[in-house]
Length: 148
Image 1 (tube, helix red, strand yellow):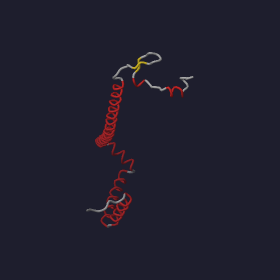
Image 2 (tube, rainbow, N blue to C red):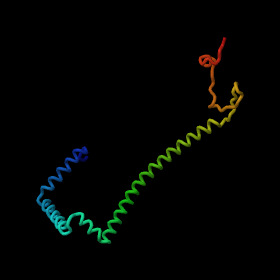
Image 3 (cartoon, helix red, strand yellow):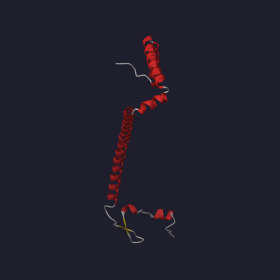
Image 4 (cartoon, one colour):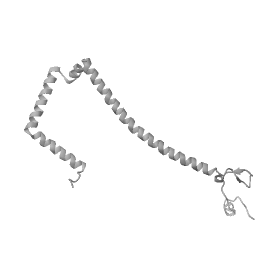
């Protein structure tokens, strides 16, 4: 059914070994030498690498192209970051909307009867959730009701 999946370490070792073998091939060595020679001739012709960059940027067309590419890369990165943050914000908004709906429904259910419960001490009207019923035993334990 296919090869077994390698661990990250094993895959890294295999890639490293493959690259090492490829570098040992004569045609790869020759190609690397040629590219290195080209690079050296360009550097020699233009001086140091910093001078190369200065000369490249001194040409207004090339400089403008480089700046446009840089702006495009930054915009793409910003857009990718924005997409991630939009998803996160939408998810949080949806979760908070659900929480708000639950809280509102609980509140509406709690006050649906209205303040109809009358306190025996102060004769005020109270909501059901505001009242705590006390037994005589509870009051005696709290030493509120003293029975002779």
